[in-house]
Length: 443
Image 1 (cartoon, rainbow, N blue to C red):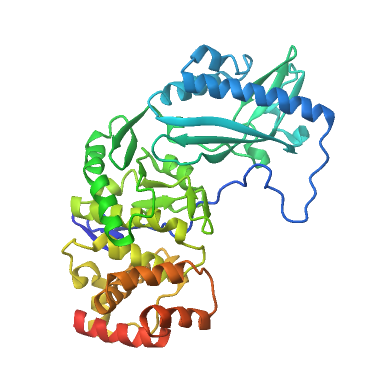
Image 2 (image 1 turned 30 degrees about the vertical axis):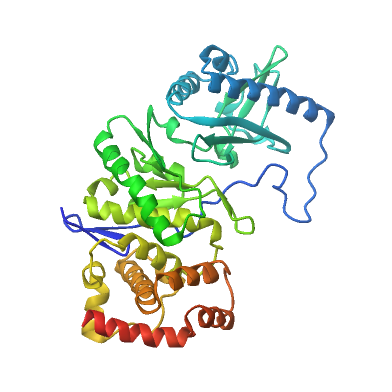
């Protein structure tokens, strides 16, 4: 199988499947505890019994977290409802075992009694007339991978609690799904995990993935260094690569609406604060199938593309031009690869030869399609970044990214102003010079 990478779009020639790396927007993350109300909204008043429940549940979850961290399975199981569904109890024991090799700096939970579900419509299978009470406050898991997360990241958990004989227990983490509250699933929910550390990060995978793990381990540190050569050293330079075993697991990690069947890799983040230049929960998640089909050189380009997004995430405001975000990541990915523009951008080369260069800069909507036009959008974006670097030098390309991507969604006139400051031309001038560059490079 020949894997031809074109602007981080890997075309698996024999299968005819196009897979793309689309890390343009961080996965939507839950609000921080205490910050979940929209502006102007007033939460319902907390009742005394809610305060008592919250204290009891907080203590229960503290014991659960402590048991996980110190690897005390008996204490962990003691927090589970003994009358819960056997399947849930088995899954929880498996979860405890699967977390055994995960390097954790922290693992804790937060409870919000002001965001409690009304359980009157709870489906019959989830109800329990033998319990004294059932309660479903909002719960967030907060955890940090050692050497990766400078601060813990957080994920929502759809926990249902039951009270029996004066004691509270965790009864289920899936019973509230029909009420719109899902539990986030990590790799440890899908099977035993193995973690392979490197100087600049780690690879987290499941058993049976050793050949692919070895490939990723060989490339991770050099990819981090390659990105730093362009972007600089003002980022943590620590990367977590996750290799799921199935599309279902990948979807759990990156979001239920993400087209996981169409990508080879994606960089995600939970929260980004561009004012403080911080990003939490950054991960690079690889396709369980597409990434394994890549040649070593193609995998190298993909990793450097995604790690560029990790490095630049804290300086990137959502809504910035996609041609810049993806073009810059592709520029770093292809840098030093030896792949010529015509080879890496075959669709663009064909278009230039047959009908001339593009008549406009790529628009954001071009990067949301799922047909061959997506390939062309990425190829155009890469060629734009390559043109800027060839014409003005790599430092100017980096400066352009920092200025324009750091501004976020701005007006056309403001975009022109930033372009003039960075490279001395507005969008019209950039288009004309880019067209001339393509005619010379792809004729």
